[in-house]
Length: 116
Image (cartoon, rainbow, N blue to C red; front, side, top):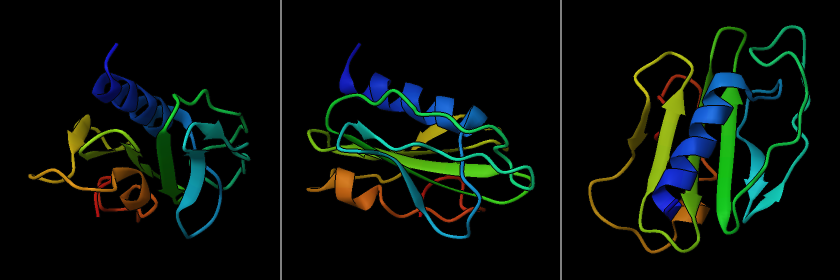
């Protein structure tokens, strides 16, 4: 599985079932190191979990009571990818390559489909 596929898989998994209750972007993976994602009965993600993170991948998410948006990138990649629980799958966020996709992945706002 190549890096882009791993990012897409992680983004898709998080979009379907990950998040923490707060109003700002929260790390789920920071350069391959997982963060425990707490659940909250008033948020989209209700049960906590610890994701499996591919090496060099950074994934952040934001949520409200009805949706979660995710944004991810690899330190060795050229793009970031975003997704949402609203449907439409996971998409590449920018049209040209970028120097620091893992840093750029640290921003996500619910309602933007994972791409800011």
